[in-house]
Length: 174
Image (cartoon, rainbow, N blue to C red; front, side):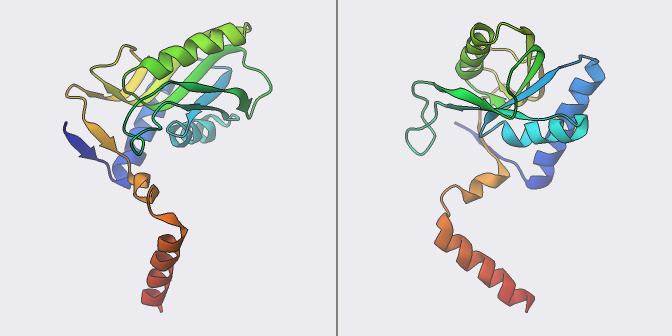
């Protein structure tokens, strides 16, 4: 499996391009919902640009083998940031990998929130092997690489290593 590492500047560019694509489409959404954790950063871009509250739904399926193996999907019973979803909902995540999570979440939301008129999906990356096609994406990944996002460097660092890193940087600044 190939791998692709994204820098912070590349990652910011992808987020800006995604927001621009949705804005250029002219589609109006009443609620903004992201999936945690991957969709929180792209969702934040949308929330700031559109000056809208960001609702967050916790989902988890990549829990095994340090987050590299997909297992059963857990969808939280609670959504933070909004008391109710209604009208047009923009669902934001970082990527559509297998597509199983997004497909299940869309089904779950439509069943649980009958006031939803339509759900559209915006992601940074759409992988070729996905069973779900997002409404908007920035990069299509035909070879299904493992994507490394810039903040993942913190995944295995732990508090002690972070303290040492911060102190070392502080000592260099003098």
